[in-house]
Image 1 (cartoon, helix red, strand yellow):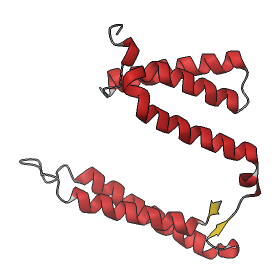
Image 2 (cartoon, helix red, strand yellow):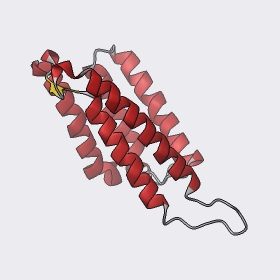
Image 3 (cartoon, helix red, strand yellow):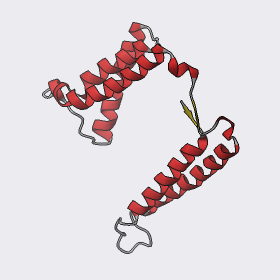
Amino acid sequence: MRLNDAVFGLFFIALGLTMILIARGFPAFPGQPYGAALLPSLLGAGFIICGGLLSIRGWRARAGGLAETDPEMREPRTLVSMGLVVVLILAYILVSDAVGYVPFMAVALTLLLLRFGNRPLTAIAVALLTTVASQWFFGSILLVPLPRGILEGLF
């Protein structure tokens, strides 16, 4: 299904308004003319402006209505691929604490890459490199506590 740009524009306008409303409650920095709300408010304003432009563009080009079905979405292969992505996300939510981020992501990315037509050796290499790089970035740089699972004592 393809949604008209006007629908996405309205979504971004609502998101920008929400960001600004939430940011209003952020504290001010002592002795500064701005506070923690400045950046989220600027981003929210940008979302509102871009959403408005997107809505105007979508409204002008509304020949197909607000939504139209893409013929490719009716093919079983596409539906199975979309279902696999959803199943892997749900599986991560359910088993990541026990299994761990690194083993789960390595297997999940390998499955997805194979499903989308990559050669096995390429799929495994890309999945392993992506998993290690994302674990390093989120775990070491951003300090996001990723589940270690079965690798608890190794790193």
